[in-house]
Image 1 (cartoon, rainbow, N blue to C red):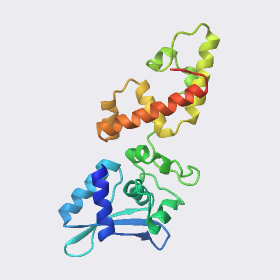
Image 2 (image 1 turned 90 degrees about the vertical axis):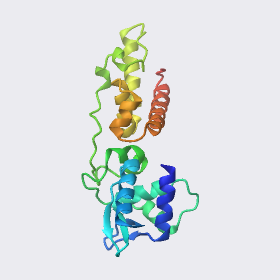
Image 3 (image 1 turned 90 degrees about the horizontal axis):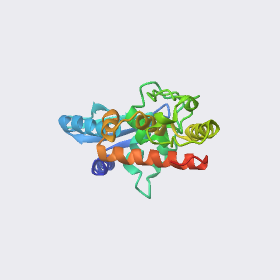
Image 4 (image 1 turned 135 degrees about the horizontal axis):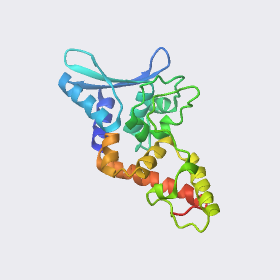
Length: 227
């Protein structure tokens, strides 16, 4: 993933373009020599990020891979997230907020990889497609259904209810993409199965799972619930 983002950034800085259109929406165009290379790079970017571009011919030999609005913003975050100094035009797009995000713009993989950017968009003003599972009411869960996340050794019904209330309070503070990971884990899904669902590589999935578990564990401990 890192090698691909470095390669794409070099292409962008060589012949590509970034900026805003007449409606003040950001765009990014990565230019590649050869239509087949452009098609393959478009697919590789989608495979690694979930960001789908479109191909446009610029001349007889060069082809551009176009990204607009929130896709352009997420793509630039992917290309420049490890860079300490950002070009001014990149900063402007990363600071841009959409007025509206149309359904179908955000893929599942984008929700996971760019959750801080996606969730920074107000759902009231910019609803987007999401396939996040419906959150179960945790008070209705049996402790034994939580696959080892919570201890079932409670001395009283009151103690069990207290643990469930702590679980629910922590749950409400989790971001929706982390909730999805936790739900999959509670449902007994393996990292391999989660990687297949997210359509990303196994190693990166393990990092995402580890981060989600750590965030949830910290929130639980703040509520006095210990795993």
